Length: 150
Image 1 (cartoon, helix red, strand yellow):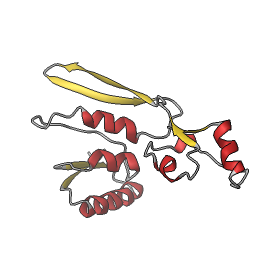
Image 2 (cartoon, helix red, strand yellow; image 1 turned 180 degrees about the horizontal axis):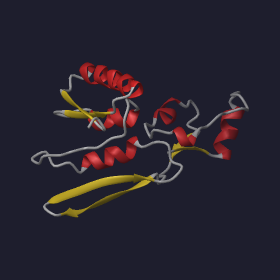
Image 3 (cartoon, helix red, strand yellow; image 1 turned 120 degrees about the vertical axis):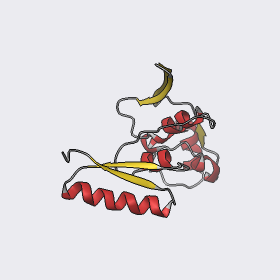
Image 4 (cartoon, rainbow, N blue to C red; image 1 turned 45 degrees about the horizontal axis):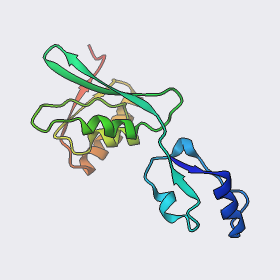
């Protein structure tokens, strides 16, 4: 996570930068872009816990999942840590939240197949259409399960 210290803020101010530097650490994606583009090297990165990774057996299966800490909005780094544990010679099932948000895209990218679950409502159909378009654009084959449809 990027951090702007008081000393580094003073460097920016002395360099003629605005006194109103806005930093949104809760939106940090840990990409390092702000560190690269800062002309005065006033931003540094530090470790910040956003969740935990849990692993263990469940019968004949190995289960790996991430839990995002309460109040943390950025799930993608946790998803990436789970994906690092994937063994390419095994069948893997990844679960994601509904929709087409960043966590969904991170979860499905590189997938061999996606199972979309929807509900028989106008809202469900609306979201399904958007998700289908995204998967088609990503060239990921998919199937659909309609939940709560008797």
